[in-house]
Amino acid sequence: QEDVQVVALQSGTAAIHLGLQMLGVQKDDEVLCQSLTFIASVNPILYLGATPVFVGSESTTWNMCPIALENAIVNRLQNGKLPKAIIIVHLYGMPAKMNELLAISKKYNIPILEDSAEAFGSSYHGKACGTFGTFGVISFNANKIITTSGGGALISKSIEEKNQALFLATQAKDT
Image 1: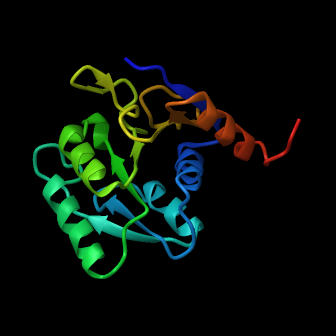
Image 2 (image 1 turned 180 degrees about the vertical axis):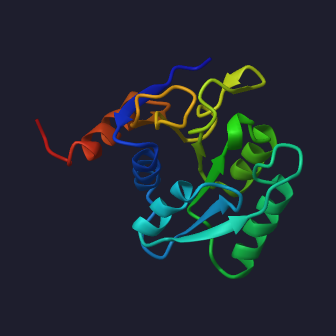
């Protein structure tokens, strides 16, 4: 398992919002997200003035379908728009088909933000959900696997990303 960095936040939704900011999502950008999810995975896209583009699920895991993802990317490219990010949700603790989704992400150079709010403790081929994408998100809301009644966290792969996320999460003030 590679080293990961974690920033504790007020909620999983706040972690998605911060993750999208860290990926540079801005007004008028498009973010690919799965159609079968809780609204908290989509609202942060709207908070930033970006547009969610919904991608269908596949029948094995109920998560984002790799074929539908690539079709959506090709469609957006034909319309002159490269999506800024992909939000993949590991729904009901079931890991998405990450190997296939990561290959598509890499092929088109679109970063992945993993919503692992319902998958804390789940793994895919021995690797923890939330650690595959550029950023991962977990939640400690009352209905989650491990709860503190609320809260969430943003997972990153570098101390620099963690420090930048912490800076933004603490109202971007220097100490």
